Length: 89
Image (cartoon, rainbow, N blue to C red; front, side, top):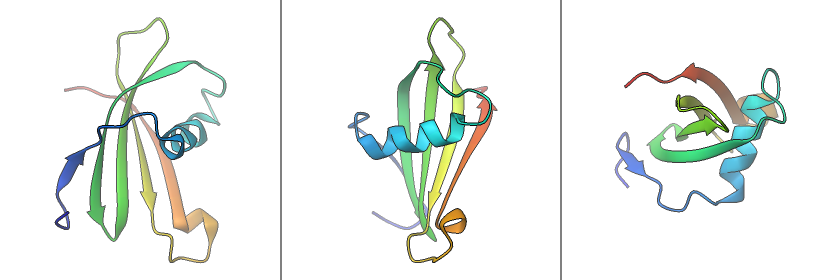
């Protein structure tokens, strides 16, 4: 994969992706049921995963990002997950 290019993720069932999503939802949306609708991966300084989810009973999409830089020693820097919020296309 070329650096900087976005690539669609085909297998949305990967446990790592759901770990990222649960970590991003932990503060304000812990325990809410969701469906992973689509995801992309971008190779930058590390890997940037972007997830689009729907909460059960809602039609709105919400965006979550996970920036993985496994070579960093500080865990909070090695993986940064963010609940970006409602996604508008």
